[in-house]
Length: 116
Image (cartoon, rainbow, N blue to C red; front, side):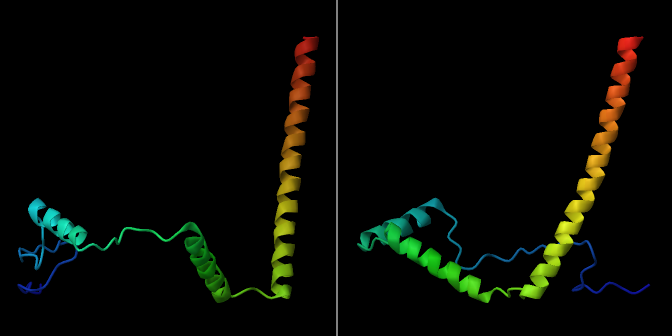
């Protein structure tokens, strides 16, 4: 069996580090002080652009994403349409046959219960 080196990890072993976080501001005083500094500078960074600017940006991004789409050719589209129609027709026949069979079974049970 091979020896486990001190720096090697074994499968399933979690990585644990006691190293301090650099530049971490974890106290409430530091975070509130930073918020006050941002407000005191006089810049309002929380203001959203108006509705029309945002909608323009949404549509611009949408059209740029649509340009990246690889659209199928007409031949490929019609072949996939044919496959879909065949599968739908197949399941239509199967479900209709089950429906007809169950309907006939219920009719048979109803006729025997009335007579008997």
